Amino acid sequence: EVQLVQSGAQVKKPGKSLKISCQGSGYTFTNYWIGWVRQMPGKGLEWMGIIYPGDSETRYSPSFHGQVTISADKSISTAYLQWSSLKASDTAIYYCARLGGGFKTMGSDDAFDVWGQGTMVTVSS
Amino acid sequence: DIQMTQSPSSLSASVGDRVTITCRASQSITTWLAWYQQKPGKAPNLLIYKASRLQSGVPSRFSGSGSGTEFTLTISSLQPDDFATYYCQQYDTYSGTFGQGTKLEIK
Image (tube, rainbow over all chains, first blue to last red; front, side):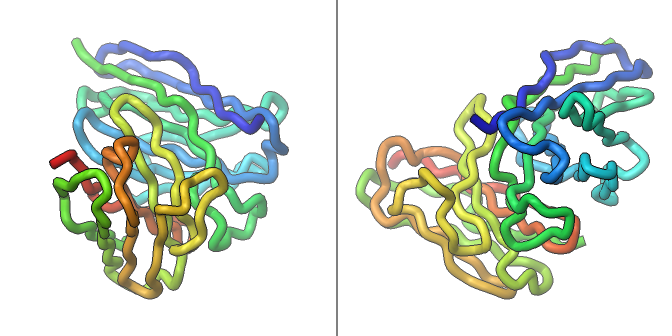
């Protein structure tokens, strides 16, 4: 079974750093882009960025570029989303999801076909 | 950035109704358009990709159409399990943008 399993909920103070994870299984992790999506409380979905684990090429939304870092460790089939200095406005659920195409060159099959269960991040003093 | 505008933002309908949700892109995305369903407390679920291709396991009452800048999601006969929030998403050229969502409620 293809699945993405995310790390557990986090509660952090403003200014702290954080790294959350997303482990893939049931498929060749290096062949599929992985993306991160933010959902703030009661709000819609926001596309943050994607990474190709095969070579760690990364693309960011302009809204999130410089605010977060996306990385991957292909040896353990895991993608990461990290912050160096959290803000209260980072409070949200963060989902990882796989792009379904299976190639580095993106195509029309590259919708998010498999999703992780989400990681709730709460930033509060 | 490509902007996606969904309409309506909310919709009340009854079991058995035919429902259509529209998504408009700020520039042409050919058919690089997906539709997702999200229920409270759950991750989104892919329904349609490439504008009109039904994801495996999704009931055939869901269908998608359109190309360029105008797209629609149609549910032919609403079932109780379909009351949820629906999002469109463009995934053109190594980026992605979601619509603001359409909340489908029971009338």
